[in-house]
Length: 149
Image 1 (cartoon, rainbow, N blue to C red):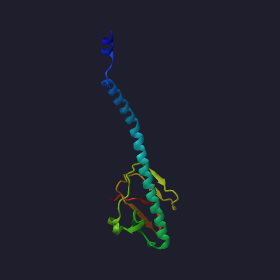
Image 2: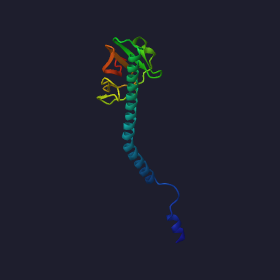
Image 3: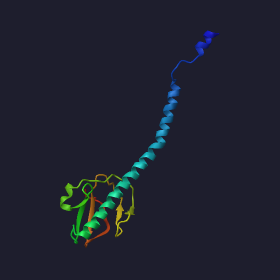
Image 4: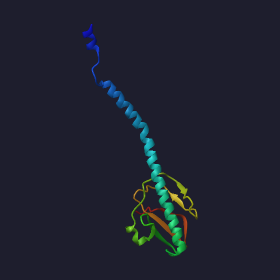
């Protein structure tokens, strides 16, 4: 009787069924978690783009008030590293800062005057921020990611 008990006693280790069940549970957890993780990354990229555009808006307003940029018409590019507006001729010196948000639509930039909107109808990855001055002030859609890249 004792010999039979030893034969029936399971040896150490996992069976193939145990491993398949664990793999199936891990695959289901990953399938549920990946869309949530991607959505979080997308929100982070969008918030970064909005923060950069808002900073460009503030800098443009300050530059207009202090006379750092002329009161006429023109296009400028915002250098996120130095925090200054560069003339369009020096666009190549400005590092692209778009994070790559792909959300569709428009939204009002927080606390920016003159109804400056965030235009998020294009893929912003690798784009520079362009600020357009018309008649000495910022117009609607004046602060946006450049589409001519």
